[in-house]
Image (cartoon, rainbow, N blue to C red):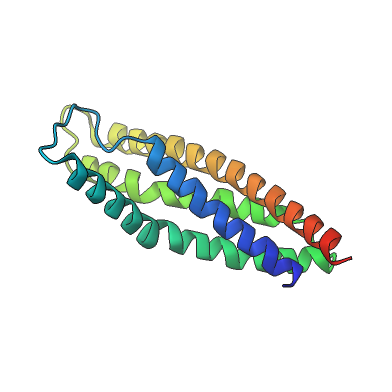
Length: 162
């Protein structure tokens, strides 16, 4: 296996493990739920987790795998130091917050209530900026961890093959 493929595979697995860890760490509901059949509830929870991993995390992991391969190849040819991938992850983190924030902001624009229209618009911009900033910071942190993972995979691959 070539070094850039090893780095890409490592980051693919890391993203899937990160998504699985988030799903395990976050409970499905905040209230008390009583199941009549606990075994069925466990199987339904596992099925839902596999479905979420397959439909949500796998495409993001695939994109991460491809971009890691591109950046690792350029890193090995000494064309870059790999920081562009960290910036791309931050931009993706920002972009992933928008589908969650924009619908509420747009709905509030057309139903301002007691607020006037300019105040609602400025408040909406503040929400988009604040949540986008949180997504950007989280994306930069994940991108930095992925950069470290890729460099570690490249170093280990170099030591194994030499």
